[in-house]
Amino acid sequence: MMNHSIDELELQLRTGSGIAIFVEGDSDSQDPFYYRRWFGDKAPTFAFFPRDGWYRVMLAVDEITRQQASIPVFGIIDRDYTDEDEFAEFNLRFAETRVLKTPKFTLE
Image (cartoon, rainbow, N blue to C red):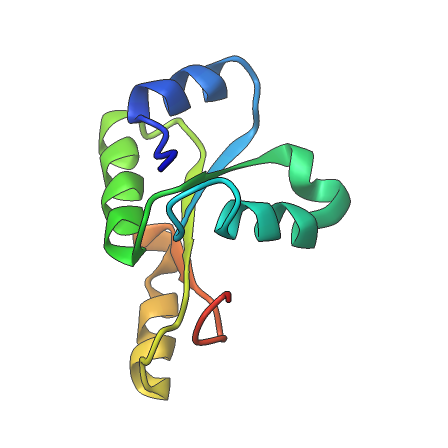
């Protein structure tokens, strides 16, 4: 499992690696791989970090935001099985949480 530490992330961002986006998946060959492909020519602007589940994505974004508000960090999680109302409510809080739920149930 390749879960990058928060310290490693901070160092990478301070050296100019762009915007950090935490995603589900437990290795770089899972969610980060697909997001890099989907973001295409914009991918170098972002650094994708696997966090092994939606809860850990939420924690990582929250931790970095509290420790270093100036670091550009966000999260993307799957919709899983949330209903329409909960899905809409979650994404309305994006400015607060910095985590976006995709409209699809799973990335896979």
